[in-house]
Image: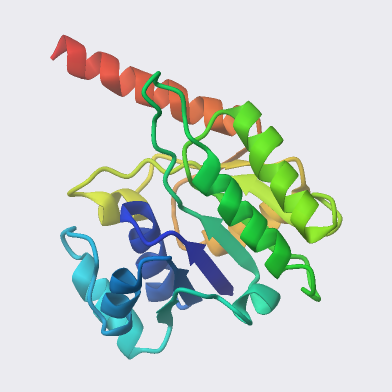
Length: 224
């Protein structure tokens, strides 16, 4: 598949490198030219065991490229994976402005898409933010509706720093939150190299599973 990963931070780099390893054609997009330059030279912009070698192999094989402007990739990609940050405000609430901006960029970019692209949200966000800011921005910018013009799914990540590649390859499950069987089928094919079960929920449930998991990990740390 042709995959565009937006946001070359920790999650985005790992996601892009692993998918390129599995034979997908991956374009990494980031507004930071330093990150893009490193990736174009086959170097990882983040420190993670095993990631530098995956990036180098993907770049040498021609399956992993990076850019600050996806351009034509928006019109030909099968899957878009949003991995941009959702920083916290002083009061603890999420700042969804970066996520909304990227959703608008993707929505504008797929206006002339001839197929049925699937937009995948890997960033951590609450259901209301996803519906009111991300999905709304995609529909507004693309001029179409989820399920007809494009697909949409919430695909939370459960990666730990230091073991993220192993966590990607050996998850307990892969969680897909989508209301469209067509999108679920496309993403199940994308993740077909994983042996863990794929669990499909509606798109409001998936982010709540992520938040519940984070809260449980925090509880375990507190007890430890």
